[in-house]
Length: 93
Image (cartoon, rainbow, N blue to C red; front, side):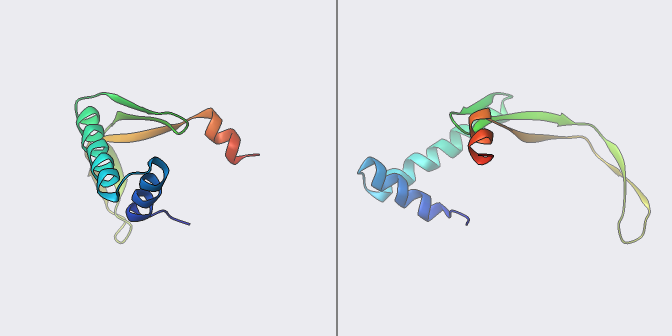
């Protein structure tokens, strides 16, 4: 089951006994802060979940699936999640 943004906001608001607008503003600010940190090469630790960090993916040669022709895939930055051991252990009980 996927958790929508609205469901997440409702759960947060109920858990901290605050209006949904406060929970929405906090969640949106958290997203902006995370984007700024990752954009500037930082890492984000999400306690109990894991760590988000930016890594470089080198340029490589790929194949066009419909024609089979070789194409060059440019280098780019990607965001990776390193999952916390506690979360992995909880899922694999």
